[in-house]
Length: 116
Length: 114
Image 1 (cartoon, each protein chain N blue to C red):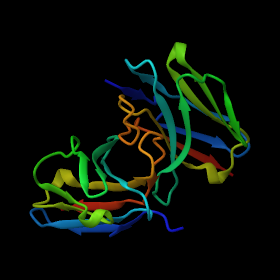
Image 2: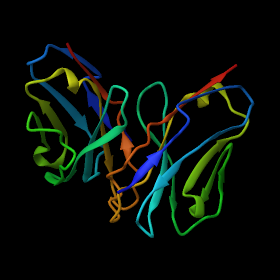
Image 3: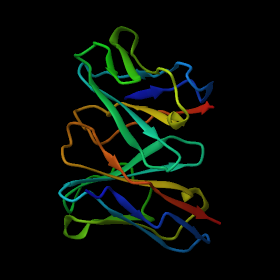
């Protein structure tokens, strides 16, 4: 069965610092997707990124970047030059397998607090 | 385009009472999901509708929970009778494609059972 571990429960940084959120997952599948979602104070979960297990290239989107390493089963998320608006809970999530894309398994989440 | 909307945003009820949560998905999204996060635990999948049909309800905790999606549009999740351990945040999400995993979530309905 799939399992996700986000070891960092809470992280607090000062604005403009870089911060990396860790995600380690377990799966028996050979092909799968991985996701990151953000939950700002308003409560809704916001989709950030989806990566296919075939593609191990790092991805950068503005201040966000993702490092996917299949060999270590990690899918880490880095925010560069953090801002107060980045304060949120971030969830790593793989689907349970068999391409059940909507049935996500969420980690416990990492609460990021960016202070001015 | 309107996002996923949920109602009520917060409900406080007594143990043994009934509560009905409503979700309006994004127009045109056939897939509708319910998730919940109870205190201190992970967000857990409850069930998945494809149009009006229940595709997967493996996450429903027990028969006190009843989800419906009449006409394949909005969905309701009824808890009857509510228990203390049902307290948490109930999220609804919708998507156009199942395979992508890109779900659009609502802001959640917080349920407090006293």
